[in-house]
Structures are given as structure tokens and as C-alpha cells.
Image (cartoon, protein in one colour):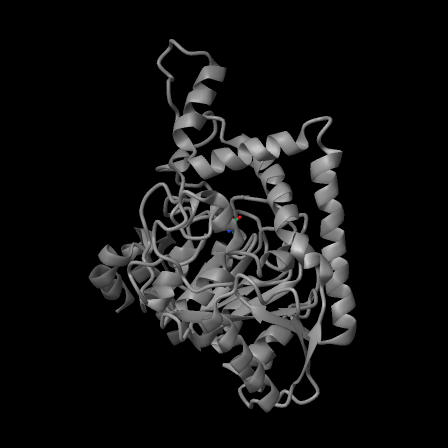
Length: 454
Ligand code: GLN
């Protein structure tokens, strides 16, 4: 049914870069057979999924939305891919994304535009717009995204779906093609909080192949989501981040946020205001740390190891082939960040830029720690505005960056956060998201509050 739905609607929406129809049917049949044989699989066995095209898959190309990886089929599965397969979850295909996960609208994909199913003239969010559009248009009941600065939560907010960025280190990055390694985290996406919790359980857990993987038990997120369905939040203290509201936020978004606070209070939670003074510097710090890591991580695309190779005709040196390939293979946003990162890391500038940004990062983590001494979770709007029009911000990188204002602090501090649908904006009838943030390794709180709110 989902493959039929993809065939029917994805020509218009452009959520998938690659559809693995035959492989998905084989996996679904195998899941059925295992269940019939009495094997204990995940409760999600046989329920298909859309996978962001940044996770390696042995049976499908992995492009990361970039020409430089066009046609590359990886020799190994990512840890997340492996876990999905082991749970009997058929992979419907690979979803569109901003090139190497850099962007907020999926318009930086080298391949195609993805449209928001709520209004096809608007962006589906980014970088994981393909996964969110697939969910919102019922092409897939579950999806996987990655969140470096908001790429799971922000697309979820603008498509009225649920997206979770788990605590850093709790979902393996093995086989997740790196954007910024200290910020990247894979996570679950669904249409309900409980679906998302079940998927969270499948993909989270320690992995020795990722040196930043945390060896800690995965919290009972499914139990928390079920508990939340009883709508009781008495004893839960919720902090409203003072710095994540006000100027630059659409009135429809703020109205929806206030209505959400009223619902949380009604469910029994105590809602108080909390100040996180350094969140205002998150954008500046993020756009130094991320490009610095990008400039290093993307050095591996050297025309020798993967995908595209330009100018290899016997008349060019290896260095020239490398330069020609990187020039043809990377899009403008990726080049911009490689240059910014290389500059920020160069000797003489390192302390002034990268070093300074790392200090700000610590201050942001301390803001979170101080807030969590007073409250159990923090909340804010997920985005300052609803989905904007396709093309509106493509020529203005700074305006594009500002769309992730509310989601960036979480990645810098390594904590977990969720976006849960919060109604439609009175301004334009487009979806709004409520962001819930929890302390590191307490991702179950996201599900408890998210399910109670939902
Ligand atoms: N939009 C942010 C950026 O461009 C976040 C991207 C992400 O989370 N992958 O970096």
C-alpha cells in the first residue's frame, strides 16, 4: 500500500531519491514469515520506513543529496540500517535532503525539490525534508532523520509530524555519513509520539564501532509515551525558555505556543519561566563549530575513494582531478562552509574563532544544566515561523540559518529534544511545532510530556 502511495503522489512531492520497491517487499515477506514461525521480532516488524539518504545501505545508493556521491553504493550498512533490518522493518527507500545535511529547506539537494504536503509551494523543512514529507503525505508510517542543528525537529514542526533528536551518543553514528561529528545524531520520526517511541527503541543502544557511543541503558521511552497518554503531568515542572520567543517570531507561532502551555498546565504540569542567557550566542557558535568540522570531514571526498571523478583523462595531475571533482561535485552551500571552516581553523585564527565558539558551547551546556536544576524539561516553539515559500530564502544564507534558532542550542549541549505537532497557525493555516528538551540520557521525559500534550 505504501509503495502504491509513493507511486501515486511522490512525483509531485519529491520526498524520495530512491525507492527500493522489490527489496522492501522481500523484507516485508521475510518479516511475515518470521512472525508466522513464532519468532520474537520488534512490534514494528513488517511496518515500513523511509530512510534519510545519509545512512549507508548495501542495497541502495547513498548520495547524501550530493553529486559527489552520485551512483555510490556503499559496501556496508550503517548501524541504524542494520538495526532496522534486524527488527524486520522494510526500507521503502532513501529520502531527499540538503547536501550533506547542510540546510533548512531541502533546497540544497543536488537532485530535486521536495514540497511540503500541506502546501506544495512551501518548503518541507530541512535538511530532512524528504523524510518529513514522506510521513506527512502517508507515503511511509515511520522515518529516520539526522539532527545536527535541527534537521529532525524543524521538518517535523513544519509538516505536523513528530521528530526526536535523542541524546548525543545514544544512537550509533556508524555508517551515518558525517556532517559535523560532534553534533550529528540520528533519530526517529513518526506521526504519533508512541510510534516514534517504538522506533526509538529499535535504533538506540551502544555500538563499539562509534567511539562517541554511550554505554548506558536506553530509557523506557515506550512506557513513557504510554504513561503520557493518561494525560497526567502532575509533579512535572516545565521551564519556558525566555530567550526563545519574542521578536522575529510570528504571532501565529507564539499564539500556538501559549495555547500549548495552557494545555500542559491543564494536564497538571507546573509551568515556569527560565532564562538561558547564552542561547542568544548559539547561532554564532554553531556556524563556526559546524563548518570547522565539515571542512575536515568532507576532505575524504577526494575523487579517489568514492563516486564522482572529473578530469581523469591522463592530462591532469591527481591534485587537479581532486580540485575539478570537488568543484563539480559540491554545491554552493557546502563550498561556503568548507571555506568558512578552513578559515576558522587556520593558525592565527583558531583561538579567536573556533576556540571562542567552543567556550560559548560550554556556557550553553551550563545554561541547560542550571535550568534542569529547577525544571524537568524545557519548552519553546520549534521554529520561529511556519514553513516559508520555496525559493524565498535560497539567496540569503543568514535568513536560512535563522530558521534554526530554537533548535541549535540542544545540539551544542548534546541533550535530547522532540518536536510535537502544536496545531495550525492562525496566520497562514500551516503547522506549528512545540519543542520539548530534556537533560542528557533522560529522553523518556520527552515522550512522557510529548504524549500527554499530543
Ligand atoms: N539547518 C542547520 C544547518 O544547516 C541544521 C542542519 C542539520 O541539522 N543537519 O546546519
